[in-house]
Image (tube, rainbow, N blue to C red):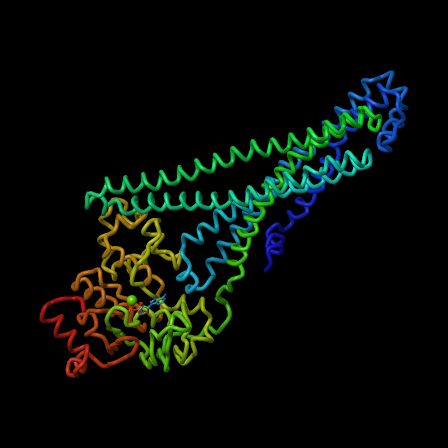
Length: 595
Ligand code: ADP
Ligand code: MG
């Protein structure tokens, strides 16, 4: 999608409103210029006696009953002027109000579309893109577009229309003087354009300094417990003062730059006007120009020069808008996941990995290497292996957060590639290694997969996860709001709520990715026992680093450096030389729970 079609799409039906604003702006630019011509007409043709040269004024005089009539009733001209001003005012206020409507609707559509699109972008995209960066795009880039449509776009039309109409009138009055009047226009435009291009670098530095300052605030606030525990308050304050000073220095420098720009560009504008005044006086004295037309020259020059100076600034901002737009279009152009096509077979069956390899980066080493794995229907199996051996990656492949680089995965003899992704994820319940709970009530966290679920089912799940009694003891019970950083729940409690949340889904496949690491061994055993009793129609994969959590499983797979190196029951594996035997000895002898 190009930038233009991006805007067009998000404007929707408001594009016609935008068009009407642009037309109103051009008309109002024209009417606004009329007042000077009327003054000139009064001076030269009504008060003075010269013949009317301007066809527009000749027309005006004829509908107002001729010059003699106007001369005897000067109030007519006053009324004409009032009408002109009222028209200008009405059009201007129409433009102001409607610009607000169009720009707000446009950014509302963009924001909503961006957010929905971010939701369907693949997991891999979110892993490699910093969330801060995305937030920045969804806020400041969108705001940049809003500001452009809330004023600058129509301002460009206003300035260009004013310049074209005014210059054509001036050229029709006096060629030589119009040339003199034109000279200063490109000068002031280029001066302000290049100034703001230069100053943009300062803006960028100032933005960066501001972002850095908010990073410092955010980090120190979220790490406040560590700061207090290590008596780092003074250091943190000093760190903030330094960043704050840097931001002030840059901003101060920018204000100075801007100050000198406004005064110097003002001087250039004055020089431009002065040149027209001086040349005009000579032209009037030599009879080449009427006094009325002289006033037209001076007022038009003023009416064009200042806006042209503004145009330089708008054009540099326009550069920024196109960059912002490109960043937004890039997000929208990222291909989202196809969540809706594919088969929806029964997923209670064997899970089979056939010769599966995978690497996160195409030119990087394989994280999983030739994995062959058969997990029988209804079995509970354990996957045990050191940190970084590829256990979580294997699970990501099973829920199609990533696709294998080689080989195939089958569930109940259906190739994973052919299965509808939404359906697959509904049916594969994963408790992630690092549970994330939303800052909502515990109940709404638990209901996330099934909002209409009967609350008794929730209590069953929390009982299995050995967290029901804990929640009951909170003052607000299930209505306790989980703190912003999960402060109100301990690590183990959070993990157990996350387990219950997955159990609520009642999926035929259940996966615990190191999910019991933060609970003690007894609770771990208790949870596994009640799971077995209640979830008897379910294939379960327990990823763990504890032999205690694995030993009751029907089958155990040992994974080392992306390869399955051993498999069998606990009894079989402790007989064989290998990692499992070593871990077992280490953990039973020293009661250490970590490999
Ligand atoms: P485990 O769960 O067994 O601790 P993982 O599956 O998380 O191991 O990781 C296996 C390997 O893949 C590790 O070497 C890890 O550094 C790497 N890895 C994990 N996630 C990514 C990623 N998003 N991009 C690149 N490498 C990754
Ligand atoms: Mg892991």
